[in-house]
Length: 252
Image 1 (tube, rainbow, N blue to C red):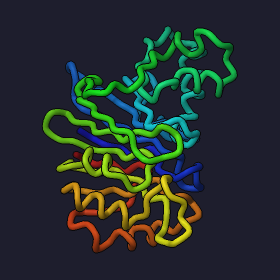
Image 2 (image 1 turned 180 degrees about the horizontal axis):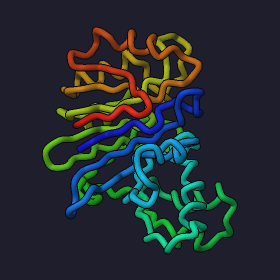
Image 3 (image 1 turned 90 degrees about the horizontal axis):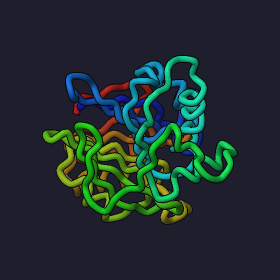
Image 4 (image 1 turned 120 degrees about the horizontal axis):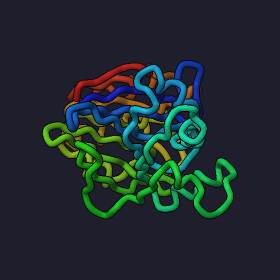
């Protein structure tokens, strides 16, 4: 299983990165299955450096804030108006109401919305299958309904935090995972609002408690020093810890 960082800027696109988008690939049915975790602002352009848009097999959205989902509108335009042959309907997993939310964002009339091009599936209460992957989700601590996802190919597993404040469900989901891709949007300080985001230190403590083997810090807003976030995480996690960087690929 391979993870590629497409975009990792927190809250809005930065000068060096699109907003959240991660490409997960694994062998499947004689080829390669490509799953996107989020498709945030600016990410559709960057994605084309790593995979053709026609090769994407499914999308899973952690939540419906613009920096995690809004380039689905651009993806809709590609799929609807591309001059080549019609593309198959693409499975899209997300919180309840994802299809309606994205249709409103593109100002489509009520009714079918984007349904001719995307098949929307709300997250179930139990494990489910996307191609070669078994996916488990849990709701985490964020103002909008937000989900962390655990993706396994049967041998290895990665966990993506989505956006969250400190919470036990993320720690439980990440137990013994091979790679924890987790947000670290805040620096330590007394004025951080609750129930919103994690600091580098908080993320590292969650990774350590969960027994994760590797930690990748992501979703750092452009107004923060990435090195400062990494420094705050150092010393609180015994495994390998690094910063997500666009274009970096991890063999999980």
